[in-house]
Image (cartoon, rainbow, N blue to C red):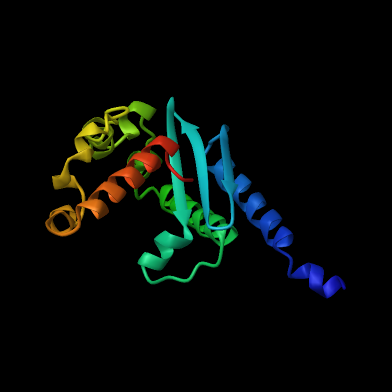
Length: 171
């Protein structure tokens, strides 16, 4: 039973949470939080009056041809990336600010892509539409064919359509 517990994700989780804590302390980041789920992970932090966010997911890894099993693996990879970044900063190669510039968070207004806003505007509901226009024969499938033949059948079809309209939509 003890051997099975060693393979549980909780053990890996605590290891990488401690590593993340050490890295953030080394980078002098006091305020941060993170979370992971079945398919992704994020780490958010504040540094010099700006907010930053690192994200990783199973889907992103898949697009790159990498195998990542779950959100905990994503946490491991983000933590390892921060450890490597810490090494670069400690060697004096680049400043931390240079590397994290691309991770800066924007305000929620700027996060909405233009096409989504356009979609909401262009495809706004016009509300309830009047149905009398659809009673015209040009809107009824095969109406022209049926009018050529049996007028009793046309009358019967109109009665059925009228009953369906009165009943409302079937859900």
